Image 1 (cartoon, rainbow, N blue to C red):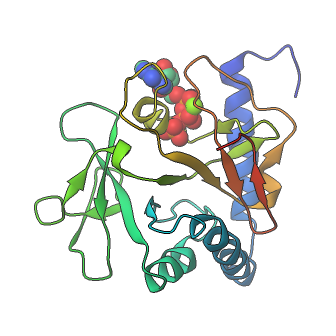
Image 2: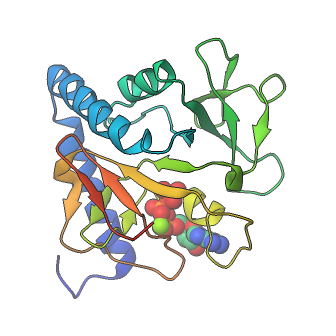
Length: 203
Ligand SMILES: Nc1ncnc2c1ncn2[C@@H]1O[C@H](COP(=O)(O)OP(=O)(O)OP(=O)(O)O)[C@@H](O)[C@H]1O
Ligand SMILES: [Mg+2]
């Protein structure tokens, strides 16, 4: 990408190109990728014997996460989904998810557990958090949709009793040589795609 472009413009173009590429996939390509992601993601997540893992419902042509969520539930993992924090603007909390969990739509129209009826937990109680992304690079840096939700929630300057492992989920083609980085961007420990598991940092 041209060095002469401003950082916001580089990010805007990358987001646009990646979302366009995702939207170009056929239904059967998406389903197949989601199944491969489930197989690889399960392998990584179930290395932990008692996983308390946050996932998310895919949205806006993201790689399908339904098969991964289902297989993790079948293997006895505790699965959580992000919920918008009721007080701290642009931060996430997490709530337990099972197929019986009552769901509501948040301000973005994305289904999330109804926290009036599902227990809400702070991020540091999770062993692992799987994040959506628009693009990732070989060092584990991530470009998201631009809300900064995950960057704020896992801000390295914010004291936390414990930090969950952050794992990005994506199509293989979302990999880039270098993602434009900003001081607040929180790096990932791993990325799982439909093709492989990448580990970036010792755990
Ligand atoms: N720790 C933080 N504290 C305050 N503001 C933050 C923090 N992290 C990110 N932001 C703000 O959020 C905005 C979006 O950040 P960025 O472009 O990195 O989003 P993103 O990583 O693509 O989004 P997301 O994490 O939601 O997928 C930035 O303008 C930045 O100022
Ligand atoms: Mg960011």
